[in-house]
Image (tube, one colour):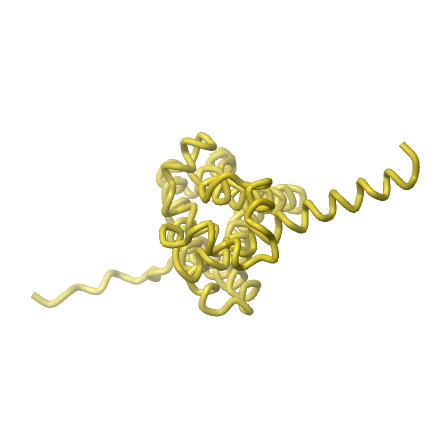
Length: 216
């Protein structure tokens, strides 16, 4: 292949990627404004400069778009988690960084994150696990490592793992909802959530005093 052919192929590939991104960005905007169920393919196409025929070169239906959005989200999340593993100084730091990865991914693409939660059964059928399992797959391993090193002060690692997942589930959804209202605060909201959760887990949130007795 000569240089001219290579340049031409590069341009086609760039156009393909740009068209795909335009469709996914338009779909994300439509889902945010109107909801997944109410959005039609026509609504999405109208948000792009593309013709209907071009659209169907990339996606066959709305479910196909949802899968593509989630795959892109999951790729971004996995990149963040790999970075967390590479940069963590110890097991506690790794758990903090894993929370930070999840919260940042939710903040960067809150629409897809909420869609994945609302369609958890579809995610399980497509990927073999729901979004939280995919996001926190190695959390239990690291919690058990802490338990093996006697860093959990005798607490049950199964309960701790369940609690950590519950916190991740609720807080990440709250991050996504807040960022949809204030998109410019995505990074700050993810950091705020991370600081809160790790501070909560590493402290006694109700204090070490005797419990306050309620009046009869």
